[in-house]
Length: 337
Image 1 (cartoon, rainbow, N blue to C red):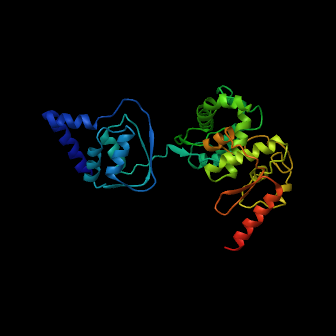
Image 2: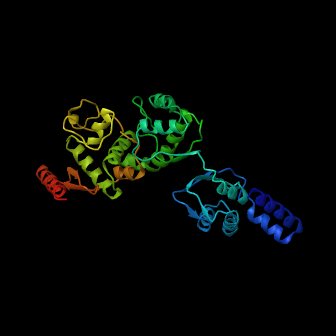
Image 3: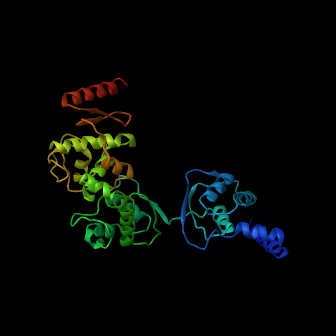
């Protein structure tokens, strides 16, 4: 197969000398630009060569999708393997084809999902060889080290909730400080700057916004429910009612589990919103944009309670009596299954 590729290069060179067709071939395979702008192309399952070529064309990475698809099929790749690939518009179509044919998966990109804590982020970066876990957590406990980033950061505590969940280009060996700076810059770009005015209108600091959004993130599975849960949080804060959010209790305990026991609710911690009124000291995870928008634009309701159903949605109630009735009905439904 390698010989065949060499012959293709030779043929392209001969055509180029001959003019006409060679000139066309050169124009089609040359890079889109000279700029190194790496892009992640993630295939969650194997993809047909034609479909992938169209995708790369739409991402402005190649000039001629039909030519790329033909080259892949000619080299025995009618279907491209699933995996993470990295491409840049300064690569030629031939270089891109070679990466796909040899299945050169990239380790330069890492995904930080919504709802992850600093501890889980540190584990992921350590596993990928991006940053030392202990150094990462130590730097996250020094938020003022990053005060040159034009965004309010906590004076003490740590950077929990301030590292934006997203997919980043962080090659192995990047280091803890650079990784943190990259994620803080993303929070500034996608949260602080776009919503700075809205925060001021709602009289929310960035710290308060991230704290509320992080509770929504950990409590809610479905995006369409996030503004309604946000309304419960604000309604309780308005009447100085304890938030009683299980996720904050678990964060204070330093663990995560599916079921919170009654004895857990008595665990002494600044984050225990059953024992303490108002917001916890800070965020309990990295919230995504859906939770941040919900915290900024909650539904207008009179709800003070909610309880989870088997499908991941919640039943909302205005009074404690309604709440108890909802719990009974949900339990009866589960017992009847």
